[in-house]
Image (cartoon, rainbow, N blue to C red; front, side, top):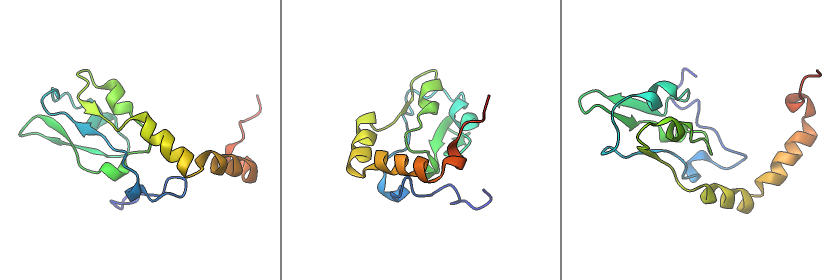
Amino acid sequence: MNEPNAMIKPWHGVSREEINWNPTVVAERCIGCGLCVTSCGRKVYQFDYDNNVAVVANPLHCMVGCSTCATICPREAIEFPSCGYIQQLIRERKIVRQSKDMLRDHPDDYRTEPK
């Protein structure tokens, strides 16, 4: 995680650069609380102290499908592409099949711990 691009990895075999999934900050609604900046463990954001707003600095670090920052934003100042975009990508790239194959081929990586 020391390398700046260590978090940019393919998502189910699809190059991250091909996937249009990252947040957009609507500056007019941003109140500069910094929740998105301090909550995102993938370092997608930086904070512009001069303008008191969050800035998307590393959009490709965003985990495909994640929208936690938008969920916690008190002013709904963060927007993402539609979930329909991701669902279409899943269908077109046959990602459900890939996921099922991964579960079948690597059960020890995904098995729940016995209770």
